[in-house]
Length: 137
Image 1 (tube, one colour):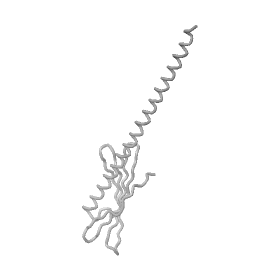
Image 2 (cartoon, rainbow, N blue to C red):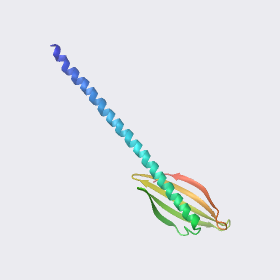
Image 3 (cartoon, rainbow, N blue to C red):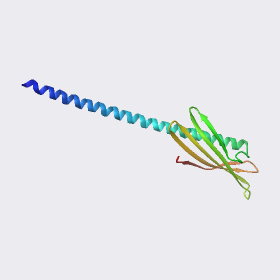
Image 4 (cartoon, helix red, strand yellow):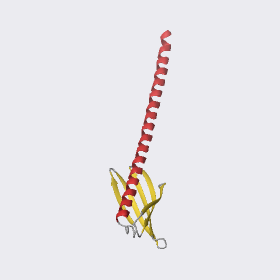
């Protein structure tokens, strides 16, 4: 009679141990995927910054760059940046106003940076007016 209690007790303890193991596996999985998402987002941001800096270098070398809208892709390691450069002219102030949009992509994550750059037509002085991290739609 005393042995009949042992089997249900062992089954109950085994069930609790299995539930704890499954819950631990799920927690580990979700923590690892959230870390991966952050790393991908950081890589996408880095690719977008690289595209933005590349466009700024192109503008600094050639003040007429972007007279018509320029679109190009830049590969940064295994990630890419889609860069768009457009220019407007303010004749009264003698400046070019460049708008640079760089969208970095790392696997499934995207980050988009929009910069406004002002270039003096006479002396070529280059000034970063604004830099905005805009949401990707």
